[in-house]
Image 1: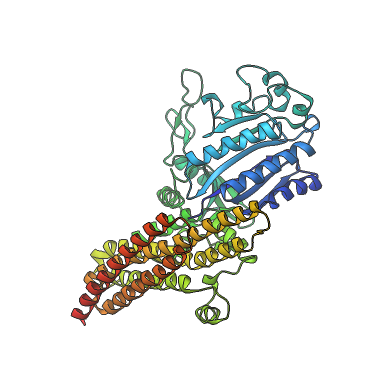
Image 2: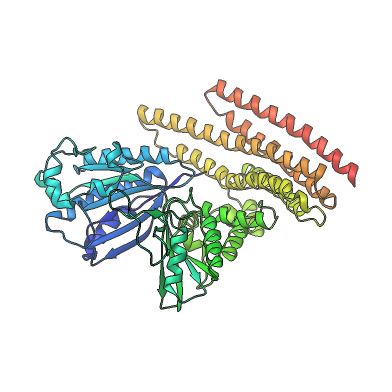
Length: 566
């Protein structure tokens, strides 16, 4: 699925909205990037910008914004309450979906190099992207702030990772930028049934990684224990990668624990919630709900929902929106005000942005989809319908699995059926995506057909584009074939071991999946016939025929199982 990263550049301007708008215009000029938030601060004279999108596009938008900031902001005249050393002070990349930290670091290094070479701005790489261990900590890189750059930049120790290593007039204006790769940060608040800030702080100290100060005798009033360097000895809290403090919220008249989660791969949202609940209860206090500040990755919410479904002994192979509903109710995210998933979850924000300028087949209701198919338009065609048949077949397999997991008397088998439901869900999610991807593949061919063919160069470019588009249009239905075949395994298992009252549903699912295989193979063959690379075409057709043979054999086996039970 699509890779997504977040970028959170901090620009050293928080008062002149004209300058800020010119910078954010650069971000919005890049297709595939969504500007999520622009947060200017007057006292800090700093604006924090959040953008999300596919990696190459986000890096392009970040580069344009950094370059524009260097043109518009003069650091020699800058002052503000927040530490800073550059027009773009920091520019961290954050993995959001389907991308590893290692891959994100590679993008950070490419972005840093481009900023240094093309924009002429010195760059230090920090956090996970640090090229030297001592530069991992941003505070160390920024020590002395802008005023120290003149002396530091020419030293061997603080020579920039990329860009100029001298305090030129241009560098005096732009300052230095820190480009990093870090984990996703989440600001998470816990609502308590108390008005006591002291009690809230006590719970915060119980859980935050830093913990609380160690004391002799009385844990609150006793003498602070210090180490050999004279620093207070700390008793660590129970949650790694968290910072927390208690405070009182006038608006709601209750105390809260405000937590910053610096690595949700170490401490998840649901783990934090459960631990705060446990520590609060131990102190006679109850967590009444919680609040997520800002946006959150979809995976974090799905992980939370699945966690609570498992605690209930229920299948996790259900629709994402239903899983999110369980997460919201379990975490009490709607206690203070409604939790709008479309405005809080990054992937949904991007999805809704994309819908504004694009009509997707899967967003049509069934009647609209049928009518669109029947229209004089060439798409959706057989490829999209094949993918849809496969998706419905996989969905039927998941349905039988979910019904089986919830069947009275089968409670001890819920996890077994939940696993099958998850497999079915994976198949129908990917096949649903292929419904539109098949139409997109057809459109790529039409785009290639429309390319100019006046000169020999244009003819060659057009022929190459046609070949690539046709291979793509062949691979899409081939993917449909593979997925449809895979989902037959779910249908077969459910016919054999699932709720006997739903055995025919499993059978119908298998029939739909088999039809998806055969229908998609027709598209593979007709598209492959137009390829000039005949060896590639013959290979894909041979592989496709093997899938068809397997699907037909599976269909007979599953139908025989179903007929034996009805």
